[in-house]
Length: 444
Figure 1 (cartoon, rainbow, N blue to C red):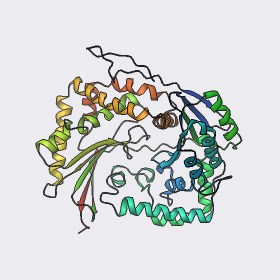
Figure 2: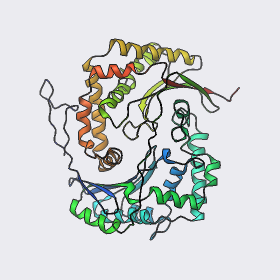
Figure 3: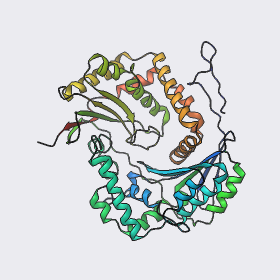
């Protein structure tokens, strides 16, 4: 278990001041693969995760949805495995597996009994070495992704709101504004040559981070990693491009219509400081919690309990809702669902008043400390399972070159002050934001 330091005024260790000490060891193969090992012998379980530095923002024009499509293709067989073998081997060993596509990475993972660690490494290495790119697999997975879009976006109330629909209002470049789920036209136009080019460019060892967390010996893991991944040819990779854009200097508004939505909603988004600069960024992360997390949160109290003009309020940083899994630019978003008889501008005005009050009057350090304690408690629950440790360490290493943030984050959060949160609230103005209204029904 990780050790902790720091006590409250009554002598009880506080979550916010806890110093974590999960052991972290690292290595790098000659082909560029970065390896992070997090040994924990308390339970005979292991998590293996591979994070590739390619996400929705990496897609070329005319190939929207390609990063997500490729996530599916990576499960369709490889040099030594048939289409369903990856699933069969993992599940046959008593494990689970999955993958996902995000704004700035695509990940794959397995959780298995630790006796199957070498198996998991072989499976990930085999598809990194040579995924089975065939016309049949491509056409089949295009159809699968199209059906996923129908289920999760087109045929679901609020399916693209606001994560797919507000970026075109807030940003300008193709990388930041396009639909990462993909258009049917672009998906159907994908060729095997496109797929091979994408694989060669982004699925190189030097573009990946491998994390292994759980009941393992680090030296043995590194031996296995060398055996399984070491002969994968080195391929040149380029540094991720800068996706940042000029700050907004005036409010931007848009309206979308959702024929399946039973009630209207409104979303507001602002640019935040670069997530890589944690000292400037974390106060915004805490601010989102102060505004929306729990019944006593500022906007929950105002919109739901006092004014009763909303049915739900949420706030988060990052298009995918995780404040620490995206590069700059990353938005802070507020999402409010409200009754049809309440005008969107009524909701927006109430939000503006609360933001102005917070920026002017500030808040007590005790409110910040309570908020950080909740955030830290949630974070500790997230990283207690070996999979949580493997995935968090992979993101921190992939995007910041510092898996050790796994241990450092609670202490960094504990340093956030009330003055910093107040200052962050002051940046959420009316002249530097995007506002997106969702109206039920079809367009007039």
